[in-house]
Length: 388
Ligand SMILES: [Zn+2]
Ligand SMILES: [Zn+2]
Image (cartoon, rainbow, N blue to C red):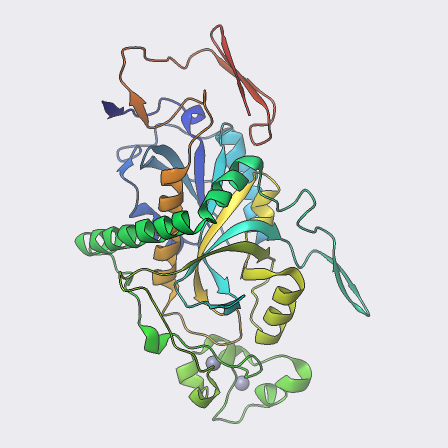
């Protein structure tokens, strides 16, 4: 009979979830099965670590949740380094939240609320601008971006049709649970799908700008590439963006209230992608399925998996209606992935432990090697595991 064991030290955590925004963390917290820090923070932090954490259990895993102090790859790099100093035994870090999606992947339309999972991370803005074009320095197949063996194995399973269906069904179930939990806790965020009619994709070249009132900055957008600040903050409805400029397509969500999941290469940069033209050009160049801002920074410290809900189409148009729903769908896929994730044999700290009378104490542990690399030796008392 499996029983829930509360961990006694930070070393017993193998999974981290990293969010860039409180909105994203809010959705994730609704999917914790239990918190370990309800009363106080029993685990603390390493010296010099200024992150704040929430700890608890999601399914069979102990999970530490970290919220970054802001967006962007630099914030992500600094905070993830601290996370790693405090939680040195992590095996998998999941970057969970919202992102900008590429509207069409191969033969499939992507709709707001669908979820992307990273097979690789491309730092598309790190490189050199030459007169003839931009050359990125870190390509995916280099050390940056390619998921480690452990994660690659997991993703290969999800790329089979059967397991992808399973993942989608499980995620849809979790979405119902999350929506119910949000209702019970009277959360202010709106986790319902805003509906097909709100799912608006404008033609690539149609720019979000002052359409009705005269504006010097916006009227020069074709030559400058810039719209005025007030337009950049206003919604499409406020500016009068023309709905005859929408891409005509049938918006489809599965009957079970679910959404689609795409696995592929995700572009990570320090600025928000908000141009339909650049989006399509860069996506085609690097075969990207989505754009976000933390993966490349976090990856410097820990190999991670990006799991994010699509809240906009990475173009200039603005609408915040999908952010909560997309944060929820991303979080649900994270939980469904964790259900299938098995921490390498020999690693201690699964939240569910068989109670066979042989409890393992954690007092004489030393760890050598790169926890995220291939080989790690853990010595505990007189036993040694070689984890691959
Ligand atoms: Zn303007
Ligand atoms: Zn617009």
